[in-house]
Length: 236
Length: 236
DNA sequence: ACGCTACTGATACGCCGTACCAGAGCCTGG
DNA sequence: CCAGGCTCTGGTACGGCGTATCAGTAGCGT
Image 1: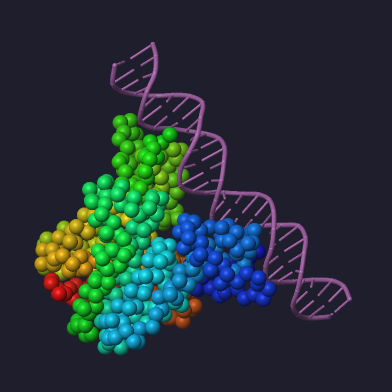
Image 2 (image 1 turned 135 degrees about the vertical axis):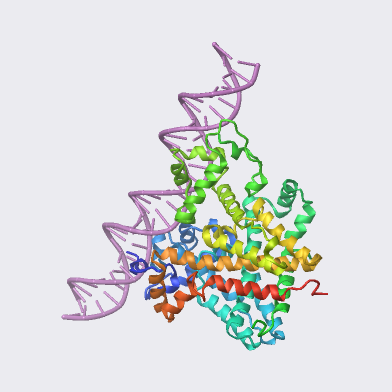
């Protein structure tokens, strides 16, 4: 029987279980996670199945996977945390604390824009992975360094962090919906614009990443507004 | 063949297609959506299947559903928008614009807390439903009434809205992870606390909705901080 | 009375996650 | 050097899923 499933208490997350040690291991956890990420980036969340990952890895049977990973859920958790590593950018040289938070927030936002499947998983998996935790710690450190303390620190972290998540989620929703239609962005904008009574050009400009009125700009200005409003020891 | 699927262009969302009219209809769209919501509230997103909805409605075959709904995705979109109606609370008597936004934001947050499955779907479905749109319109109106205009208006809406979504998503993540473990909240906190090196009591207090250090309070203070920082025509 | 349409109920297809099992190879203790 | 017990492979199987398909039926407009 596959080793990973032996654990009596599953606890709902990979991060609450020990990784199975191995010696023979022709297939490491990393291999599996990497293959999964590649597949997820290419085909989206619905395109991922244990069988496809197995095929991608050249092993005919899925049983090979279950030696390194308890179930599909584990694999997804590992994949999400893996790509979050991309959000851990250095910020010391970015300027004052507001600029630093801007850089960090944008980095996370861009990671989620690159990997919409990860965004779709944010509401189903508690942030227990090491990279997720490092990210929030980095947020906390910057704000603490700026003089935020106690409740005010918590509130400021909450404001910035949740704003980033929310923006990523909203963008991923558009992306996934368009993807589901099977149409190219442009064509979808035309068809959808008709139904919604919006000029396709306006819709396109609203959704296209590069457009000056696109989501990336909206994200940055929204974040800026929050950051400008934040001040240490503001509340009593 | 089921009528709904006839539409040549699916466009990725119910809201971009016409509802099939019907005369005989012993089973309305509303019936189906209501049954789905009941099931989702009770069993979570993974507990919903077309077959189970059909059983719940007393019709043996799932084909009955496909006359009113093109596919499972449509049903989920309809369910999400349906529960969003609960977030459309009146705000005129709540005080100044900040208080009004506080009331509206909290209402939405609480809706998502009551229906975590809807939160899990936020990243997969663009907000095209009527209730979703009404909600954002209400946000816009309050801020416009407070004197926000143009880019500043967009940024303020983005800040408030995305913060609410992000907080809901983060909370749903904890909820879903604990749910998946099959343990009661208390027991999970003990087991997880062990693994993470956190006192179970601290973890419990952090997660329990009623606790003074719980997610609901964190949401409110975070939102308050954002609102306090917002001012009409702040940016150039 | 007829035929069309909207619908029912059943069945079927091809996928999914994952359990199971027989065997293979290797590691270790005697 | 061998025996036993690991870890791991490959194959198969189970039950459930979304949804297509199809033969029948009931009621309505003419």
